[in-house]
Image 1 (tube, chains in turn red, brown):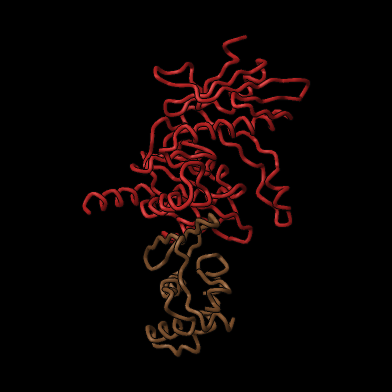
Image 2: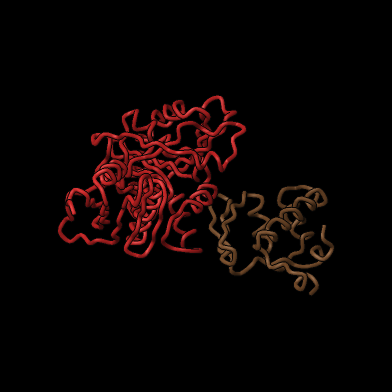
Length: 285
Length: 99
């Protein structure tokens, strides 16, 4: 089998091998995981999961992995599952990190997290920030070092819905809308960790005239974060962890109707200054 | 108001973990694997649910604290206690209320 059909997705010393059945499958899969693909394992890296992606018949694909999972369907369907397996393998392999269902963009050493449930606009706003000079750190699954308050880059290419939810659109119909892959150039991707300046919980609302960013109390932020934690600790330990995180990092709610206006609002909010003030106050405390 | 509740003292559920900040709290119920955010007023009521006070006594304590007639507070306190109870945060069961 061609070595070009074997892809390695790496993160923080672990990698996942993806063996693709055809050149086309390999090309399409590479487009989706382009920024986490590594040429070969670095010394000491270990494979935590192995996957195969095959085209069984015309437009009928199969994804399998080394722990026995199997999904068949359209290419988008199997890739959706393959990507979920990949992120869950990274989450399981590194329980010392705090994992959030969120997207992250970085600039000048500081990062903004966009956290929230499916359909809140995380990936759309992430792309808006990238178009305004921020760099892709992560999409859909963010790894945080809880001691340092830093995001580790896990830059899966974002996938975005073509249009926001229409006022009378059924929620399920909106969530199952096909997504398109955002093309992110290598120089728009961050390869280094960044300190989290703020966590933003976007809320799409079609009756908002201008995007509005409002601070959340620690308790409200912790409650919102608790719903977005992936893997790791359970129960009170998990809640204690997000409570500490909400104390450490300022959290905000963003109400918006227009993602471009919201992108401007987030991009120009002076997070860097706030982060420097926070670091300084921590130092002098 | 539930007449049984009014004569019963209301203890917080022991297995609930509380995380407090700026007068607000986040309560975690292990039994339900559920977190509830309480604003300042609800937190005060939660803290007064110490197992020695009835709803009337809690309303009285808050009334004294804020110089408000406890009769005005009673419906709101009863509603807050009912909400806390419905989320499994208080140890109020028909058995407990009857004792």
